[in-house]
Each structure stands twice: as structure tokens, then as C-alpha cells.
Image 1 (cartoon, rainbow, N blue to C red):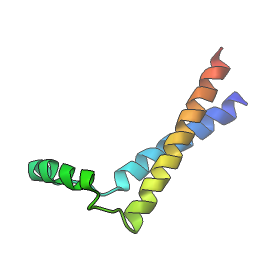
Image 2 (image 1 turned 90 degrees about the horizontal axis):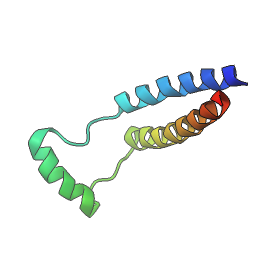
Image 3 (image 1 turned 90 degrees about the vertical axis):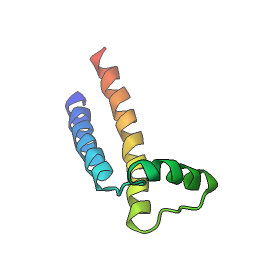
Length: 77
């Protein structure tokens, strides 16, 4: 069981890294950091298409990563 969890954890880790790298940047430089933050807080920007899909996949993989990490930690005891 421990080996299966470790293999799944490795696969999810690589998948999470790839999905995060595939996402487009939300801001560009210093001007994006200042102006982009206000747009984000006001809700003017919405993720559409592939960005929305990658965002949802990132959330799912992150939760799966946390669960698998806690499970792997449980088996160490």
C-alpha cells in the first residue's frame, strides 16, 4: 500500500508542476503588479477557456497532493 501511495504521490507531483507551468502569467512586470491587483480585487478579470480549466485542475491536483502526502506520512509511523 505504501508503494502505491508513493507512486501516486510522484505522479501527482509531476502533474501539479506541469499544470502550474502551463498557466499563463496573471501580470506583467511592475505595472501589472500595481494595476493587476486592483483589477483582481474588483473582479474585472475572469479566467476563460484553457486558463479556467488549468486553474480547476491545479486545485484538484493540489488537494490530491495534500491528501496523498498526509497518507504517506501516516504510513511512515
